[in-house]
Image 1 (tube, rainbow, N blue to C red):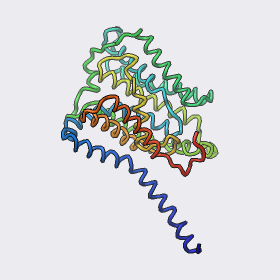
Image 2 (cartoon, rainbow, N blue to C red; image 1 turned 90 degrees about the vertical axis):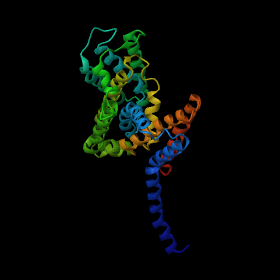
Image 3 (cartoon, rainbow, N blue to C red; image 1 turned 60 degrees about the vertical axis):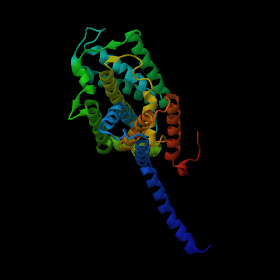
Image 4 (cartoon, one colour; image 1 turned 45 degrees about the horizontal axis):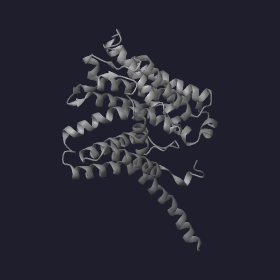
Length: 333
């Protein structure tokens, strides 16, 4: 083979790699557009204003949860405490407003109290993970189970029903015709973007996820950043707990059931790599919309619930397969 042809092939290789990388980046958005077109072809009610508002309202809580999970996954870690943190913060919030169990009633101050409680649980996740050097999936799994257990013990199996209209307004109220939960989720997205793009910790997350040893050698405080990120994730989970109580009008230990799968699926489907270092909160927005749109579309098309679960399972497998950069993988564990 001539030297000229070798040079042409070596020059073409980076260009091809760039095209593949850009294709992978835009794939989730293309999937979302295609999904909307297919569903609207089967059911004309899909693109109505009422249904789109229903979609946005449904996406609010999953988005808030997925934003917190995104930062953890970008570090190459995983947070399985989502359901436990949401359950405990939801129970706390429901007991701090007018309810049928507790005499406490501090109104909207229950919201920041529950969010801070979520941040505290996130700090516990990060501290145990870093200080005791326990893998993140085991640490967060334990904290998650503990959260559900404590929430169950506090209510002793009962349900706290809230009777505070101002608190319920956080989810059910409308401003300019848009559900309040959507506005709150939009503010959470803005905060996540600021944290990701405008803070040193947000930039350090990518370095840690790409190569922790190199990040450590570059002087990045890896342990401190990990604890901070888990704490920030906990704050988002606490906010999701507040929105859950406001939406359902009650708090109980099983209020977050199924939320973990939805959050992780949305992050991965959006294109954030489980190996860390690749992705963003904007990817997560697209991932949440894909998951919610798919579920809504299957309901409109009359798909059986058990089939819906199967489709969602296949979706996450396909998303992981497409998001992996196999050129960087020497060993699959």
